[in-house]
Length: 245
Image (tube, rainbow, N blue to C red; front, top):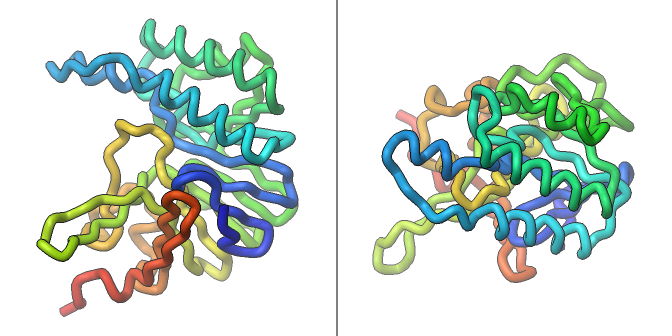
């Protein structure tokens, strides 16, 4: 657990963010049902990711015991109606989490047709943002709305840092991005899903970013933070990105 800014602590192995002033644990991009979506394109994986995802969320909750768990979008994966896997696993996860914390969801671009699932459990779906006590939290697939908030937190991009070891083999690490954008602190959360592919923030051209705000931000002035086994590592992106022509 490391403090990345006043009131903000990075939890786990770069998986979650604790907002101390709100007593809220923040996660994003669960993408429940990803395996069934892959089957449609001919890729078959054992449906073993959900138990791992559920266990990890419970471990994070046990670690910090927040009043509220906030999911910043993309609870499910399929863009259309919820698949059988999404219904079963999402309902099971919601039942489990509601026993441990208040639960709120900010709508992501994959969360179409999520409302019927959440309504069954009385869980609010905020669209497009949660704005509270100087924090603005959105999924990130749309531009961040104008606000007086000092801190904006988004997800959606699934940021990863690409580093090469001493023999030139590339390793990819889930990371959290931190920098200034439009006069406020901007935090970009990594994906919690172990299957979600990520954007290599230090190698990807600006025009290829998914988030409209990150596509405009000066990422050379951002930091990528990776936390592994309780140790936090901070990398200035200016030192890891290709030189501009």
